[in-house]
Image (cartoon, rainbow, N blue to C red; front, side):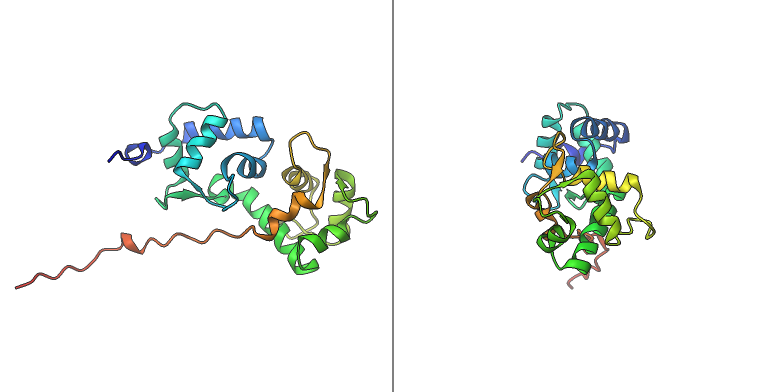
Length: 195
């Protein structure tokens, strides 16, 4: 048996920061990095093998085990977008929840947001529509331009795309909050001795 290299590694925040910078350089934001590089199976969880594969895609060959440990500090055996970047996770969850509460699902939300019926949303059209229909952003106040830009860039099919189509948003129908890991097994166990 060969234990995974992260098992004996110490958390290395510097290695993690280097990986995060590579993600931003390659994908523009953490949500795109998560969807296009890390979580390729769409499970909203990334295990060790997926993480190693993503590091290879990013041409990172440094302390992968230490970076993993910096992310998976709860020893759950997987990482989530929230562990990678809590602000991005909160933004995409709020947007998803807002769509479901106001429109029912992604398809219906897209139909309403695509006011001209053209089948796609440009950044100005997206900004105007989500503001008009009351998306409040993370703060619960009026959605900021920074938040709108992050959402639009996160939903695009690629870094170079200039429009969003319905298909680009459908992943939100299955996007779920990741439950906290069950760590009860770490609790002390009472041992009784046989006589």
